[in-house]
Image (cartoon, rainbow over all chains, first blue to last red; front, side, top):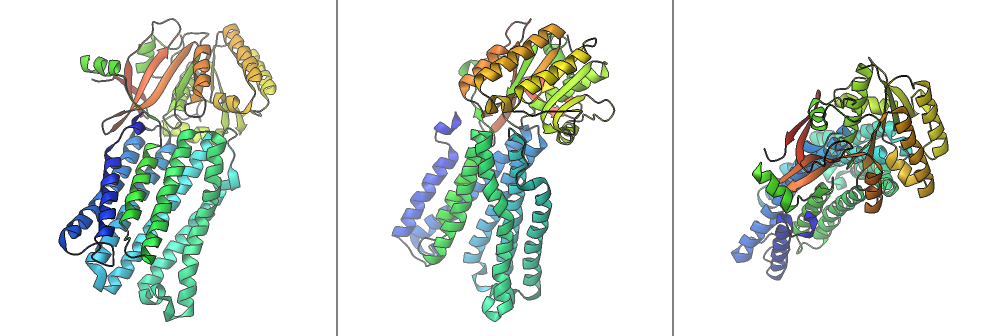
Length: 284
Length: 222
């Protein structure tokens, strides 16, 4: 199996982590992206292109597997992983631009943040929805857990409501929304909208692992575990980077990109042809 | 011989699946195993055969899935034995009941050529003890010989231990395999006839692509 050998993303991850450690040893800015000297170049090389390559790799594998799949339910799930990879990539690019170019432009900073937030919120729910349908399809008893076939419509409306409200508020008065001290309503909305969006994920977060266990499908299990790790890395490590600026966002993106790549590769079992088969192919 | 409904596969098998044979289609979820069943059923319906579809899914779900492969069952309808929406309902945990209902349906249509397609093998293997499964399959295979029918069953890769997969492959007369192979930066879906009663072993792999008119097969490496 291919997973037993070191592939390009593993090498990228190792290189990236070495760079992160060097960046910690030689910090030269509070953002984690060094601004001058040799560590600067190293930080810029690792902090942006390496995670970018990992997210592109993840999206590429999800799409290449999707191309070979026959069932539309499974094709949608593969598309979901590629879209989430794209959303994380947009977040990475946005983060990089925020640190480097947009740091002094509050308007673009805030709107960029909201657009990225909305994009991730929609794509994540699309993946959850498509995965729930996959879990239903491979369930030995075809159980419609939590009546997902109907509940999904309600949750899509809620998700779109959360995303739409965030966007409209930002367009009307972004300062008011993004900076809650401006008013109580702003503070309430700022905490309510992410809560509504997270609430749409909750049934999926509960049911997906149960479904994977029921189906006994080890590939689906691996796919979900890697996806969960990817989200965990992005949310928790990025949050940690906010608390401890020295760490910077690079480790979060690096690990998240790698885990998403592993999740994409777990969509189906990828076998290797034997040497005999390859020789037969070459002789054809 | 019963046509598979896919001309390129008919050519490989020499006109189709042999009469009285049991064929297993093995592969990971989503690769398109069911599509082979849809075309086989559809081909049977167009030839006036009795086509019997036993599924763990609801008929509505099967129709939607089949439609994605260009099969429309609204014109000619097989006999559905399904969890929901079919002419016959069944409980997957009750293998005795399932066996009885299958037997009844076959008996009523014994004068016609019979084609049976099912996706319930994987759930049956997961939900029942080995002795019950063995008894059920022995009965089903006896019926296949008795009525000279062709049975097409799908089996999910990744949900069963390797010894169960091997045992199932031993039991069936024919085994078709659909799998993904990694080749550099390509995930290539390949098809192989692992074994088929009446024809010599065929070690060659074939690239396959689904279209709305069927499954296109081409020799791997060309």
